[in-house]
Amino acid sequence: MMRHKKGPKMLESTVENVISTHNLKANLSKAGDTLSSLDRWSVADIVALFELPFSDLINHAQTIHRANFNPNAVQVSTLLSIKTGGCSEDCGYCPQAARYHTEVEAEPLMQLEDVLAAAQEAKNNGASRFCMGAAWRGPKQRDLDPVLQMIAEVKAMGLETCATLGMLKEGQAEQLKDAGLDYYNHNLDTAPEFYGDVITTRTYQDRLDTLGRVRSADINVCSGGIIGMGESRNQRAGLLAQLANMERPPESVPINLLTQVEGTPLHGTDELDPIEFVRTIAAARITMPNSFVRLSAGRQSMHEGIQALCFLAGANSIFYGEKLLTTGNPEAETDKKLFTKLGINKI
Ligand code: SF4
Image (cartoon, rainbow, N blue to C red; front, side, top):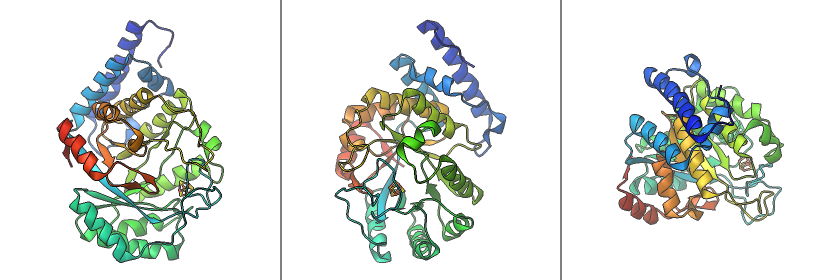
């Protein structure tokens, strides 16, 4: 356990010890091993990472990134909202919640052929994974059946498949697996102690239960959170500790910057300093060395210099395409230009 109130030099050398201990153990373990034999990250350890001088933090993150990934390759996913708005939940950031008055209009589940056309376009644009998102508390069986068909047919097109459909009941993850689902997204959103400030219609444990079902069905886990919702640095570290300390950390960790939408309760929240966002990406990379860290929502408002810093800090996945469910995303052409400028190849 790390003690605080040290001078910067001592703090840095202690942090280096913590990082190298964790990293050595991570490197000794084989991919797919569980975390049970490894040290767990304390929230204090992760806060100490955030407190490092920026260059030192980025250097640690980049070193760990290079040890585990090609530093010039970024995985590209495209996200399609297959069922929009009208959601019964009360997530304070979300314009799709029926109870908030936003510009999002509720739309029913898309037709199969329209989903397949969007998947083909995503593939033509270089996406390797196609994510389908539906604004449900959780799918009823009659909702799930057409989605299973979408998954099977998108998979048959040669794309990896991902779905985000809300909470899953017993047996639903297995049906998704049988249909060919590669990834299931279900974000923890924030630290447990801040969760109730953002969402009241479900609990943190509900989220963990769904993630457990996804894991048990042998589907890859995609889980991360949203930064800039008014949480403290400790709570940002708390979110990362939850993810990094899972028996098997998620294969994919989306780190979203809150996109403030008028009409939602979190509209008007103090903007997060962009450097703090980069620090969060770096801390995610260090604490989850083998996971894809996804620079996710909020990129549209992010200067390309900050995006470049995020890649330097270890982000190696993005969403590609004009829309992220219902909020904007940089157009594919803008991303292509940025990748060319930075010498990044798409995976
Ligand atoms: S984040 Fe998902 S569950 Fe929450 S209100 Fe929006 S669509 Fe519903």
